[in-house]
Image (cartoon, rainbow over all chains, first blue to last red; front, side, top):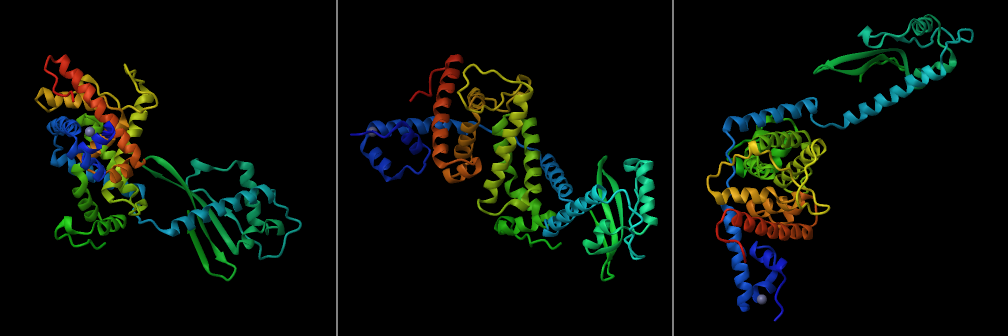
Length: 196
Length: 204
Ligand SMILES: [Zn+2]
């Protein structure tokens, strides 16, 4: 008679899916039946292991802290696909701004287009956080006063005009969270305001 | 936000509670918590065998669960998903601890992740009997995966399929971990029994 492996006997003792085969063998083989019986007797002693109680107030605290923490993690809003759209928009916008500073500075006034040029005003809500250097500031002022050149008219390419971009910084639990507010008009004249 | 009517919590479809909690319904989240808190507590306690550490781990598990409830898609039961979070939290806690203070073990099995021994000062088990303390000691020396498999199958009576889902491994691996766990426990309890001068009740 071929006896089942120790592993199969353990499975039998733990009432695992041992199959009818093991059951049949145990019914016929006294030796294996005794081994399973001993294994079960060994396992029974673990029932003596108790887990300390968690006090009711402590348990409530655990829930409250976990729930509150999870709400903060998720910004108090259910998961929405708009979040991803806005995140994508923010990345796009950063690309545009970077493109502006890389390719359109310094401003070339002589080839200015007509009076309908895009106006770009930059301001910083927390001056200490992101104050531009004086040199950069003067070129920004120039850009405001001078109609923008053809090459830098990226807002128009994005379908926007009269754009005002305001960097923002707010503090959440002492940590700065940087963002921006974009205000402007579509080429069709509708007002647009986006917060990132 | 409307709450699902909580007539008899256990009768309420858990999926509805999950959906409501996902939408920010605190009462639904609390109902889910009440359904599963005891099991989560028992499992995390048996993972670390220390009340203070188990409390922290329990907190971490629920915070992770509620924060990522939007990612639960019902492929396994909610309780199983929750246990997988608890096991992961225990694992990363162990890794952090291992980085801070590597622990040398007399006979570490190769390639096996071991759970941390708890400082002696915190080893005040509530059990009075020597046998119960011996069991705790034997569990403490089980490698992590073996302990997880044994705790979930033996104490929590989860099916092998559920244990595999919670541990994130194959059913065959669970059976191997169980087999090795029981062999290790037999060895531990035998030696503890000999140390304590008692007769050997564990030999098969
Ligand atoms: Zn046999």
